[in-house]
Amino acid sequence: MSITDKLTGSSPDGLPPLRDVIERYDLRAKKNLGQNFLLDLNITRRIARFCGDMSNRTILEIGPGPGGLTRALLIEGAARVIAIERDERCRPALEEIAARYPGQLDVHFGDALEADWPALTGTPTGPITIAANLPYGVASLLLANWLETEPWPPWFDGMVLMFQREVAERIVAEPNCKAYGRLSVLSQWRTEPKIVMNLPAEAFTPPPKVASAVVAFTPRASPSPACSVKTLGRVTQAAFGQRRKMLRASLKQLTPMPELLLQQAGLDPTDRAEDLAVSDFAAMAAILDTAAADKI
Ligand code: SAM
Image 1 (cartoon, helix red, strand yellow):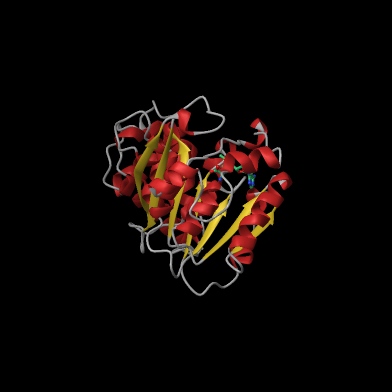
Image 2 (cartoon, helix red, strand yellow; image 1 turned 120 degrees about the horizontal axis):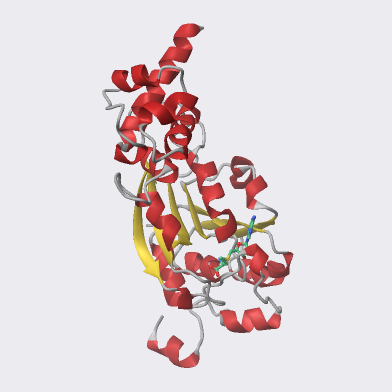
């Protein structure tokens, strides 16, 4: 933002400040929709820049709300933004942005948890990046849904997502720490996740109870070792479901011969889930996939 913009309170897109938009359309935040808005364009523009060069890119935004991040994405040069928002009250505010950027912003109203992503995005000319200040109640569910996409590599080439700090830390956690779990394994097997920005609760209106962080995910071309994502989910569920137990005990619910599975994967049966690397879980899933295929 230029010094003139700061002094006059005007935005580089010529649209009114977000506080005025919220007041004009009476967009009082609803707790049940996870509405904690980002009103500072300096912050949303920084987040938008983590999407990289957007001149040929379609951004899929979840929960644009009054449009803070949406405006930042368009100011920073997004060729196109496709957004899905659950709250119909945001329609007039988002229509104003769409009118300012003809042909560049499409807003769909509905539940992101029920979205058919390829149908929503159509066949864009350039790559797709998912960007969002996610509603925290459904953030992990949406993330798992994207990470479990089949086939892989997926229909998106990156994600820039805001989570509660605690969830962001689980995503990037390494073995041998409390935060390491199912979400860490799935995220790190399929992508390279990185916390790129931390934000205090006061950055939001209204402030949530917890701090937040932005995670940038780069999908891996070939997650390694290769295995079925469903089998990997079964392995991590068994292992982390009873994380204090040794694997020879916790994996009993997965296979009648956990010791054989662990031996084939070159793992110590007295290890616990927390001790294993991401690749160890995928190696066990691959062995189970081969065993299931051999039975046919
Ligand atoms: N993007 C805006 C910002 O950064 O200020 C708002 C972010 S706010 C944390 C989350 C947004 O997601 C809200 O606008 C809320 O209405 C919307 N939302 C909540 N649940 C949703 C769902 N299931 N599907 C689509 N949007 C949802």
